[in-house]
Length: 427
Image (cartoon, rainbow, N blue to C red):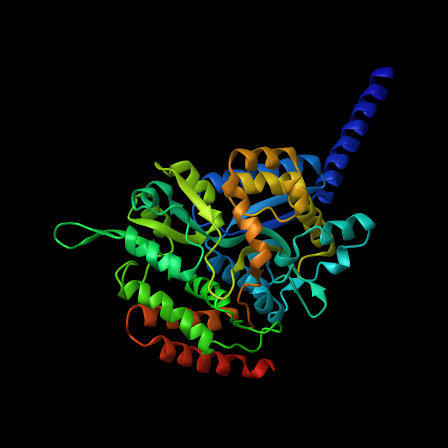
């Protein structure tokens, strides 16, 4: 009798434990999280590690990173999932995708999750410059994460050899320095360019930097009107084209992806690109290099860039709340500092720069502060409704001018006409 009672106790306990496990399993909230990276490697390991760390600290939530390709491929997959009823719960997408995501009714404003004083302090902790592409219509739609500005990398050894004492600070100084830094072999072939600005993929971003420095504003805050054929924008593109015509910048289109490689191989002495390349350059440069703010014409200036966290509308309320917890956790000062150190992106809050880790890193490596300091001269990145189509029109104009297919004025006039056609219905 005692044995039977004991056996019943075991069976009851086992059933209770089993049901308990089942109940526990049922309460785990899964959060598919789209992150834009085309290939595996260090970044995926960092993201995997952070997701695992979060999951251990939050047993009721399971963050599942999905590496969905480039930024462009990731938004296509996210919106395809949204339309088919299987969207991600959270994603890092370009901050400039804001209007597109709103037009598709794909994302949820963050404001509804910001309830406590701590939540409000968190939201107000981001650098204001990074929130410019996160807010519209009185709502906050994205949380800044891997954000950047364009900076100027320069080869200190080559500048010194050319008798240039410091990084160029104006357009005139840049053109003059590029001339001194350009070298040809005995056959007249250019073996080292003075400078290089990439024009594929993000050509619009580079042109916006030049246009901002020349005092132009490309788009309104509502994202439904642009001024691509403004004389100041035309002058900016003419300056870029002239550098190539003068032979101090490569002719034609310059690939975004190969520009850091050209710099590391000393095929160019100066390059403009995202601060997100900083860690790559630091690890791989065989020469002494510096990082500087972009030079000024009428003013200094760089658009911000990079990605924000978004929460998708068709996820369940539990998934959305879990995603919000994850986003808050990922953007805490300690993790923002770690992300900046690991990648080169700008940490998104002043508190991150007060952490011991980032203070020590910046003390040892001052170039890590240049992109942050440049925020004082930063502007919102070019972003409109139907952003991909409007951006393509501007990218096409940049490339047409650089390849000589059109004059800068004609290329930008055509881009303006195309943008007008696309944006007319949004006014």
